[in-house]
Length: 296
Image 1 (cartoon, rainbow, N blue to C red):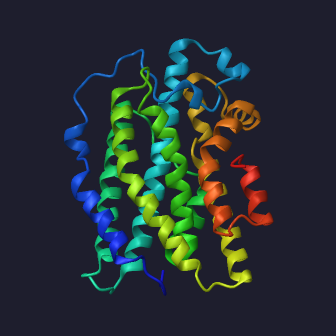
Image 2 (cartoon, rainbow, N blue to C red):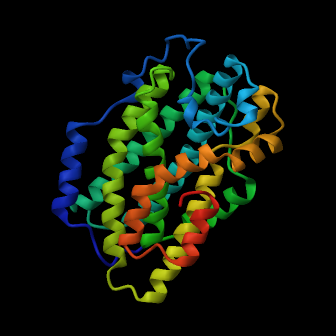
């Protein structure tokens, strides 16, 4: 990612100062040895992909709890996958740049944050005894090209999508009284630290768009939409439904037709869509992609 423009030093300096004042160590903030209460969900039931469907109605309370634990494990696994992509893109973007620049230093700070977040998510999945849920193989392989070649507003746009959507979900999880304490605490950590990352990504997108012509903007808009489609459709792996005796294809069909789920996603994506619209990145082809995964 070769940047022609740069985020203003004062802005990056403020982000660095915020990182110094308000950052967490998940290894000490989370009580890893505490037992998992049987009655606590993995995420708010309302965020389950099956909530509001006949399949959900047919589950016992314990099955619902099990399903949400597998769903949050899948979301965290997907988060790890994309955070690894993000770290590589940030390193490429800052390669051989002035280390005295606050932008350079915050980029490395963000990489350190993402490393801690990935380890935190990995340990939660381990404690929940959740299998590794990865996106579809085709998405994983396509992402190898993306992480090696994406630059500018496309790279930061994809980053912003992943961060914004998870941020809205986790703001609910951290307040969920019936949600596992380890999920609530990890959500609080992620929300606080990712708020700086989102501000950084938004500024980078605006800077990289300066001087771009209409064709370039349309191409970037479509690519960001394509990345968004891949991320949102990969959040919950259909294999999670096997944990409660539902065939993956049946669970996936119910989730895709779930009007409650569609409404939750649209509400979660509203601030992101407003930003993309203001930035001129909400073109007709991009809108079509967002609508397919109910982001609009």
